[in-house]
Amino acid sequence: MQRCTSIVVYLEDYYREYINGISMEDIICFIGSFIQTNPLEINVKEIADFEKMKDKVYFRLINYRYNEDLLQSIPHVRYLDLAIVFSLSFRDTGYVSMTIDNNLMERWGKYVEELYEQAKKNTPRLFDVSFKTLGDILIDLAYKQLKDKEVLEDFTKSIREVEIIALYVLTNTIGINGASVMLYEDVFKGISRRFETDLIIFPSSINEVLVLVCWREDDICKLKEMVHDINRNEVSMTDVLSDNIYRYSREKDEIYIVTED
Image (cartoon, rainbow, N blue to C red):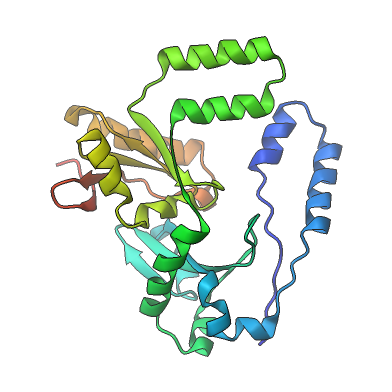
């Protein structure tokens, strides 16, 4: 079996460093150093052996309609307006992976349902949940970027004074493909029990979702328009998760797409 593999370099952190004043030449050097110190060593023969690969199988969430061409060649499970797809993780630390395609699944002699059951076991183990307020996320970024201690203290104080505690960021601890945390067993049940309410879920991107624990029913239509506008103006098409918003029902213990009815 011949297969091409490559390292995926996510540029969000490098972009923030560039905005913070690091030169493009230094950014390129950083990326080059990352590639040199993270060689991708994958035994192709082992990939063909499902027993050796099964603990590496995990799932991701992508938009169904925007990826219809891709989905013809990879195993997937339809979920709401999304698709659950599968990859192999080759690193305990860092992020090196390979998408599982139909050819590999057939070589393993497996069905998509079997991949899904394996991924449900592995993904929460490989990628822990992160659930923080939006204010906490901003403060974490500030600590990484701001050098002036006084400015940092003023920024943190201002965030705490105006923080909207009803809005939380749900992702995984590496912040990549974190929307898949939506599929973790009982994750929303635990959040809704904590706040004693249903939940509104914003599909911020494939990397995270926003969870709203306090809202007015009259605002639902406006919230959906906001998600659509953000997807068109702020999120790259490859990272768009959905133009819809979702609601988690405590009573039914299920997620459904919010309609305008």
